[in-house]
Image (spheres, rainbow, N blue to C red):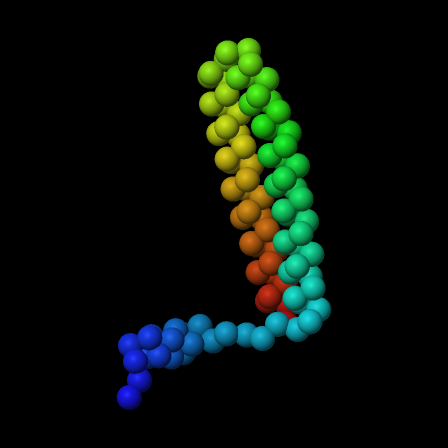
Length: 92
């Protein structure tokens, strides 16, 4: 007798079958991941410096603005990373 988990996994597999990635696809996905981790880290470093400057000057409005910008930039880069990874997955 199957458990509820096994039944759910079988239904999920029927709806969206999993695909096996080739070694080349895995390497390209890893490269995309590495590139975007570096891009996000660079953006965080730059904007955190700006936040520190604004904090030191006491401009809380500017601090909030830069924090929103940082959040938006990270979200944009993460979305772009996922689109690129999905494109690699679909190639195979």
